[in-house]
Image (cartoon, rainbow over all chains, first blue to last red; front, side, top):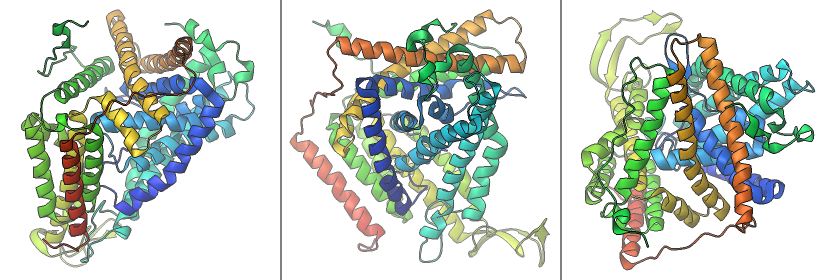
Length: 239
Length: 312
């Protein structure tokens, strides 16, 4: 889902920078007032975790393996705004270390994976879990649904960006200059492979991580700090 | 004082080997992925220390130049011009003492090949009408595939092929420029140079810290998988293994959050007040200005070409 440079035309990627800059600015303001001096280490470790989560291979039926993006669980646990920054930093590292995702398309990638995913993930989880107790299975199910839908939404947003390219950029002879397929092809192509593939995996992994956190230290969940006993109790997690 | 031998940098790319893992299950693949990551990181670090053209330039100039060139390349839709920029990146690669073969492989391996695969359908007239170049099959009038009606014959079009080649070439050129940037700049310095394009200090520091802790977390993940492998005689069922992975990710998350607390306290005890200072150690020399001016004027010319103001 990382869009490289050259897939999107300048109108689209510049528009995405214009959308993303206020989002980053607001997230930064909000976090520095909430987290104060804790901001840098917390976000750095959260971003490092978002980066590392992709290294965990999950065994799949048929002997293949897969991994998750983890953006939804980051949103659920750190809250959507911290999720925005943590994912942005992780995406920046992927672009600057491996060329995974372009530099001009960076804002577009951040919109799909660092805004759409943590936000939809967090709010879907919040909405479905309602007032269920922290350790209830309803919450784990909501996390799974949040993981599933958030990835589908991110895929839809990516497919939409691809699909509008032939409308925006064509040569005089009507030949598309960037991503060549219109919405009628790009959107279903992105959606189908996620609805029946990656999103299921994302849902499973989100639920598994959530289940573990629930069992081990439910006080880590964003917005549930009232019942938090001691933030350092993470130490006692079984190794 | 640091002894000389510690300052010496081995410029040869190292090779990380996971050893044989027999049949590669999810454990073997994870360990291999992590070692691959480390190998890649050390490799680009070793390239960035070589005495070459790009390495000798100020990182801020490099960043702005590459941004300008990638922007210009993303506007160009003339194949000749794109090939020219691509060849220019290869020339700079050579002058920066990076193996050109390695560079081409590194660039093409993932992204442009993938772009090429995406572009393949568009060479057929089914997706993009155009003049026939090579007819594959003649279906006759009224042919259809399920609910879709097909054109009389399926052929490869001239326009479609051209558009597909330009699309792939543009992606390859842009990726080459970015790969060139990060292969020739040590990561920490590259992050610092982001200040020039307006990234706030606090995020430069966050990026630098993230980069450091990634290696620590990677090592922890590798140890978990190796420990699991060492204790596995007969693999448990799929569900149990999946649960194990989910638990390890959750555990890594808990550990990183509690580590962030400890790091925070360690920072406070060393006088961190929340205000970020970054040492400014870059110095621009005449050749930096020269290189920057050259890159930006090339990009400007390219943009003018793309707008048909200059004709080639």
